[in-house]
Image (cartoon, rainbow, N blue to C red; front, side, top):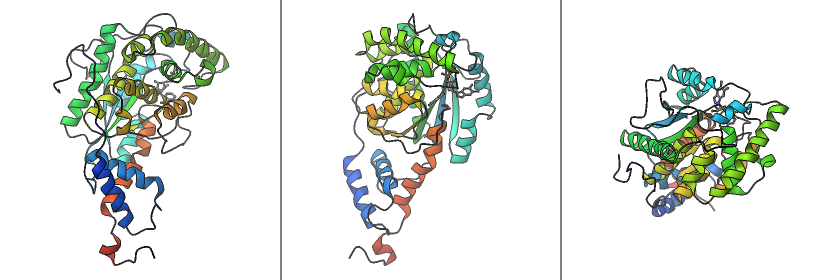
Length: 354
Ligand SMILES: Cc1cc2ncn([C@H]3O[C@H](COP(=O)(O)O)[C@@H](O)[C@H]3O)c2cc1C
Ligand SMILES: O=C(O)c1cccnc1
């Protein structure tokens, strides 16, 4: 735990920028590698970003990319805004723990490990976040707050402490995943609140709701948005009003990763909503994040525009769990290795530009 993770206090220290001098060194190194200048396109930018985040050029190979999946329940799910029932959240926690979920397989293929944190109280899972009482079944955000003030602070602090544990344990690249039936509804509300978008512009099919479900979801977003707009200038109050335990924990996680100077690959609309709020809590945190993909959820593109982040992939994915971020992870690994391992014109005796 760092000195600033004080119970109940969810203010973040100023976020520093990735190392500008190392960024310049990485730009210069790319120009000396045996390829036409700029020919690796965004892989070049990505490697330069990794070097600047690490403060090392050439960048070091990643040794412990880590995915943390945050599970939480959503009271709004009782209003038919998801194609699946709420109990799937807890059932999927068990599936993550036995390695059967999409993110487990993708992470294994990409060389990352997965940790699951059920952020709900009384959760019958092997891992609980000691001392954090965030209730199972958050409030129905169309008519009541998702969480109490103490709960939202506990959830943010949990996300933050998990980053401290992971970074202290050697994690050098982080991904936050989500599991929470109904959570694309609060995510859409948070993004609409911060971007000024209307409910019909942000609403998506989530797990695949039918037309009636889409109408219920749009109405829920509209009602929640009315409540959320009143607290749009206060990110903690916004998470309390229209977020949920999983989203609040992810917001704390993303902000703290920046504080700990650790690069993050962002996932889809849920991570995107949490990221938009985290940037309000810890301005400049966005410089430590790269957008892994663009989800099929329409609100996600708005969140990325708002954060001025350009997604690496667009595979039509709409799962969450960190899956879209992990799918992009091999690109981040390649980008760092290209910058570190390619021969320079001098090394290889290849003539540079005429
Ligand atoms: C089996 C299953 C696995 C999932 N893994 C992630 N989600 C994703 O879908 C849910 C959000 O969509 P909505 O707002 O429509 O409920 C979240 O749980 C999210 O993590 C899943 C959903 C299901 C059904
Ligand atoms: O983009 C996401 O993260 C997403 C989309 C649909 C359902 N759950 C998550």
